[in-house]
Image (cartoon, rainbow, N blue to C red):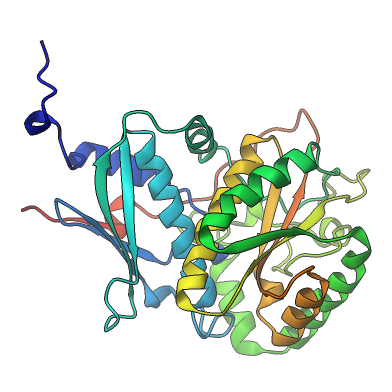
Length: 334
């Protein structure tokens, strides 16, 4: 008979559980798949640090998108541990003297996590960024209710933009692209992180879209073009645009934005919806002001998300590469 008295119940996951959870959570999205995070498990707690060697100094000089990326993995980590029976208690920004130290996780046994957490955990391996034209999202009202419940604990708002706003947003996106076109540092940075297949980081060539495909999407970041193709050539893009906004601008708000973004993207996947997060349109102050004017409440736009339905019967895109676990996780022994 198994002894389940308190003295025999583990208060910390063992190393094999930590490794398995972190491997799953490594599927979290990040700006240009930079994966700008470092983790340290000290035998009792798990610590998250930002990796400033992966800061995109031209596109993201203050590190807003880097921290959002780290927040996305923080939520993936919490989700991965939950389905392995562990509740994670988070202290965000635990040391005011260390700007790179973003969070620390402590553990409690959690033998019966909610069904929604389990569903989102199963979605982590299936989630993909879809940059192609999409049908209108199915079940949008139900998804919005679920999404808003997920972002509320992070002090954020999730808003659906009216379709009449797409033209304004497309114009703002085009202006951002025009400003960046002759920024040689920005362009060098973009080409460094995109279009190189076989690397464990960055966006591989096969995940990019051709000029013909990009021309049929109203709002999107301009990447180096993929070889000519016309996937979904008969599909007019009817994706809808969601906005994640915070009440203020701060590192804590950025971290919460990443956590909320992760929850929304996983909920999209679980609901059978395709998604594409876009932070480029919130890089420029002028574009952020335009987006803010479209919201039904005061707020600081952080991320725009394209959401739609992909055609049935398409082969599943291969997952984008990830860095080896040994590159992002240090296991200390006590």
